[in-house]
Amino acid sequence: MNHPQPAQVLRDLLSSNAFLTMPCCFDALSAKLIEQKGFALTFMSGFATSASRIGEPDLGLMCYSEVLDSASNICDQINIPLIGDGDTGYGNPMNVRRTVEGFAKAGCAAIMIEDQLAPKRCGHTPGKEVVDREEAFDRIRAAVDAKEQGRDIMILARTDARHNHGLAEAIDRAAHFHELGAEILFVEAPQTVEEMRTVCKELPGFKMANIVENGFTPDLPPEHLEELGFSIAAYPLSLMSAAMKAMLETLDALRTGQPRDKLLLDFSELRQRIGFDEYYESSNRYKSAQRKETAPE
Image (cartoon, rainbow, N blue to C red; front, top):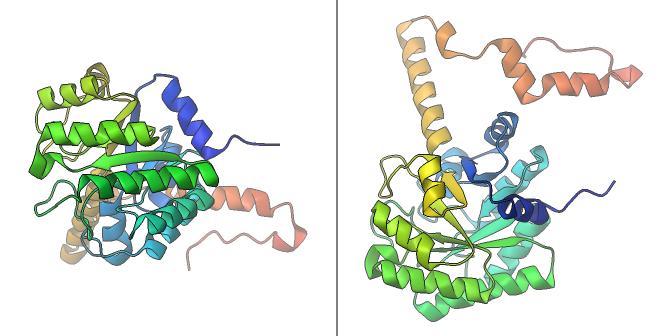
């Protein structure tokens, strides 16, 4: 049975005109939980993945192979579309092409390419700068060329020009990204509702809002974001922040000898969500694998 390609599934979701709330993942387990809770798509947050995989801030410290490996692990475990964070493309336009090809082969439905100066920074932290227009356009041109000459993948083009060059420059860049073939546009860090409205009013195609709790962009309800004209709202740090808070609370309980029962999932639910039940159900088809391990090592 032929299944639709991830990029086509994502296009169909966007074309349905249904507003898409998109929690962002940072590994295969967080992505599985997003799918289990009924969300239609997810995004591999560079901020959260850098924190989870190497324990370092999102300041360009992860290399292409590390990011690609994380994306591949996630794609292997979920059936919903994944948007991968391709950062600056890891080099010149030929590197951008290789990055896009790699993410497509890994199974990503889309890849984000941005116009920051390498090494990039999180869009809601200080010190970020963007490359000049022609270099930014070459990155998107190369990304679109890679898509058209290889496996299908949507191009999500991001600009951080609002930070140092103003909203008008960011909109101009994003508009040209669309002309070059980017299907989803992302103007990072508009700082007011009016700026968000302007982005949606002046740009064509599908627009993504990036909602970082306590960041620069207003944290509006989904219905308000939809009303403004956004198609997707990404929440890059919600799960990572919640997981870190829960781990710190549990560590405090362990350190002080306090009860942990209210902090933890039931063991049966933990096993089920990780996939033990599904594994055992499948393994029961094979006589040599009848013995079930019901306790952790």
